[in-house]
Length: 504
Image (cartoon, rainbow, N blue to C red; front, side, top):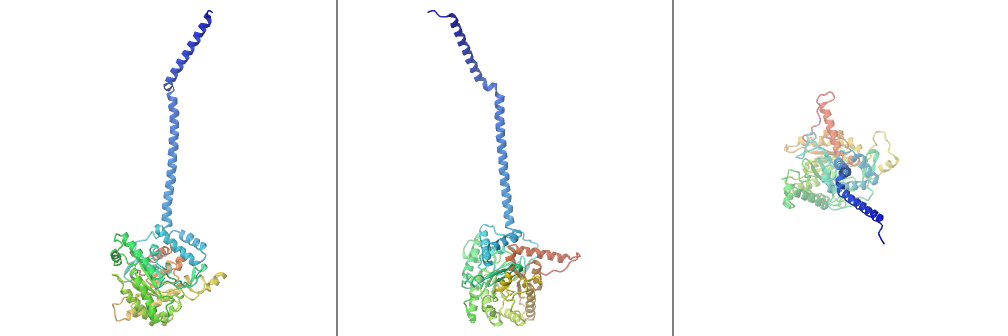
């Protein structure tokens, strides 16, 4: 069969066209990157720019958040750990009182909180300790930063002396400490009267005992000597106690002193004066090494028979034993000795007998004031307690609060006058003037100045801190400076004489 010429030609044309199409497509594919370079680059660049912008924005946002958190953390740290922050008075104190209805539980919670915060250096402290010397005083041979101190009872067992010293006082008093551990009186034994900013307590000198407190102090001393490169040996301890680092052996803080209050055990018979004296001496032998001041408590209203020891002869006998034990302390500078007296034994005979015992025994001074068995009238005058508070006021125990202030000032004046009269009349002119600390009702800077003007060297606070929080000492000091500045300038710009705080 012969082929069709027309069909053959058509077939060849179709094959040729297909071949040309394939070659064209191959050329296009080969030159495609060069034919559309601008379009491809522009698309890639836009995508990359968007990604970079998004990354930068994200990083800036993260940096801003991180910086805000860091600044907030630093600011929060300095604010919360500053005693002058209002949060401590207006938030922390009410919160603790709200959570802990029992006043003693609230007290233990506050101490535990400070102790815990100290582990991480987060405890409140006075950050603006002014170095202008406006409140500086010379007391018991030491130059102190200020004449404001804390009374015993805040830290009974030596758990937080460093934390308390950091709040700004010139003196911190630990205790009361008894020779052997004792539980004190049954609970509840502490009661608030909020409308009066007052307390009633009948603790009964609850204490973990002198050995426990001595161990607390020695641990603190070892940590101090080790941190300053002296090591942990007994020789290192002794070097610190002997003043090699320029700090008092008790407080371990320049310009501040640590006092330790001692008392007898409840089980020691009141009539056995030798056993009573031995209780006090035992405490001194165990604690004087770590103290700058030993205070002898013969005035607690919650230990039966204790106030009877304020009579002249038994008091002189006890104080002589304490003074001898304190002077035997193995330290270059031995601790001073003070005796704490009751505001209730205030007859002329009582005051004279105590002053005579102080001079006869060689004690360095008196702490005037303690809680009172009496119930002062509410303030302001004419106020009436609520039914609930009236019931609390009937609780047995020692009363403390602002209502005691006027009484404290009057008693300081009487002791100052009587002690000075004996001093001026004494034939041995080498004897130094006796020192007075005042405690009872002091709540602000004006009151602190008033007791100093009355003849005290140190104004001690306790109940004011219970209601005012950890910033109380700093607030009182600020108020003292403000008042002194006003007195110095006078209302008409003239200079006026303020109290002499330089030497006491």
